[in-house]
Amino acid sequence: MQLYKYLVPIGILFAVMLYGSNKAYLYCSVAFLQFMKEANVVLVFLFSAMCGLQVVNRQRTFVIGWVILGSSLCVSGELNFVFIGFLIQGFSQFAECMRAVIAELVLTGNDFKLDPLSYTMFMAPVCLLVLIIGNAIIWEHSVIEDLAVWWPYLIPNACIAFCLNITIAQVIKETSAVGFIITGVVKDICLVVFSSVAFHDMITMKQWVSFTVTLSGVFFWSFMTKFPNHQLVGSFERMLGVGWGPYPGASLGTKKGLDETEPLIAAKKP
Image (cartoon, rainbow, N blue to C red):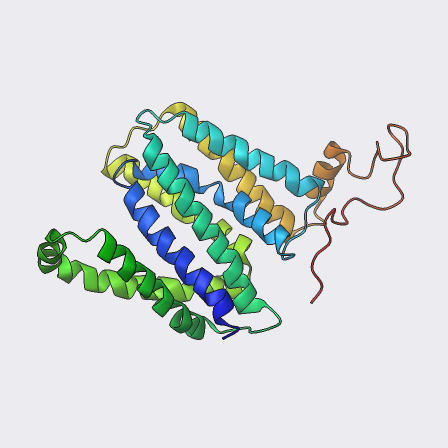
């Protein structure tokens, strides 16, 4: 029963994410939704920090601001902005990020350490129950007619979704919730380019430039995490004045005794 203390919220959040992300496509273009999803790396990092899975310091805070700036410019440059679609997508992203962080606790925490198959097996019934209740509330008779037409596509889609859920759980287990979101950057690039070419979604030059700014921030985050002692990372820290004042009781420009590479918020001890 203690396991379902985590799995019930995961299943509910997963159902909300599935409904919201699909509903948003009725209002917004594929490219615009991918632009919004670039902010997920920030949400997941903040949620992870609250749970003690990640640490916060000056460098990471700066890169988070970098990503937020690019994502904000992408959204503000949308030609066919629909506010309700923006709200639905934002709610869906919030649910997705919370789900990823709680999943990391279940997959890598000290209490459970589930394998991806067991995690999916326990979480799926909760998600199914929530979706059944939701469908009962908004039920339309045309669903049966649509099912008769589209079932040849839905079955392989469901199989692919199952494989995707297993893969996502494995990525979170091997890396982290933040690592999972960052790996989605390549997918986002492909979707934006494909939607522009195949569906002729209107993407302004401002959005392309802003998207590049966002991606550069995400990639630099990955580089900074993977190679913390690299010369480029050291130069970045010196540019930010890491380790220098002002600090309480010290004048401006005074060198602090401890290096600021130590986190401002301590990591949770196992």
